[in-house]
Length: 312
Image (spheres, rainbow, N blue to C red):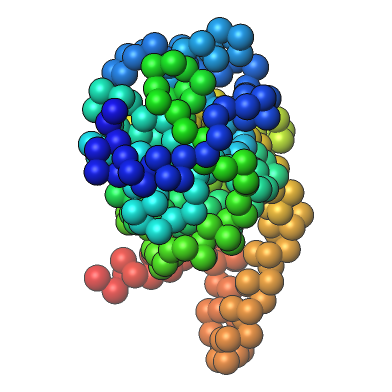
């Protein structure tokens, strides 16, 4: 046994053995999950029937987070959640050789990361996840993509509860950070937030080059390319489905808001405000009123440039 100092506690609170209801936890698996035979190694994409036989598997479907997974590499990690005063995880998978564990919490309401997602909700979930990892002593850089397969015989799996938790309930056990450390903005759920924030700020400027000459289809392709570029900068990039969803959300919103008519209206209002702020009216004998460049057939800029050269 590798439960070491916590073995007596584990024996006391260990729940009933695996049952059919717990075996059904994989009904939300993607049709072709990522999976692995060993770590380090290569991630594979296989059908569900093959992937469930692998030691490592992707349990969250694309564009949705149903499970929070914590990667805990302490030698006696099976009860880190208990030692930290946190609620029971759905399950713990422990490596019987070194004691390293993955802890899984099931969310009552799955977190959407598609084009219908709320960035505010993702940031909240990220804060809860970070606080749990910190309190538990788990790896805060964990990518959250694949985990130890709880149904694989290679691991010692314990199912602690059948309960799913709301984010608000989970948050009651920790102090949420006011800010997530900068380096953690590019791992886990932070990648979704970073990809969205960087992408939308780029799009607000880039739309000006597309709205007069290109179609919305070309615009969405350009946004997708940019989001893909941002995603490729992550040490562990998000799946392409996440890139497509984020690009679609940004492209659609920006195209609708910054269409030619609305953008021109915004610019006109800004110009009007600028005019109101100028209290000095035009004098009748000023160049501004006389417009001397017009009889000369030159532009206003050329007129003032020549005047400037005459004074040198």
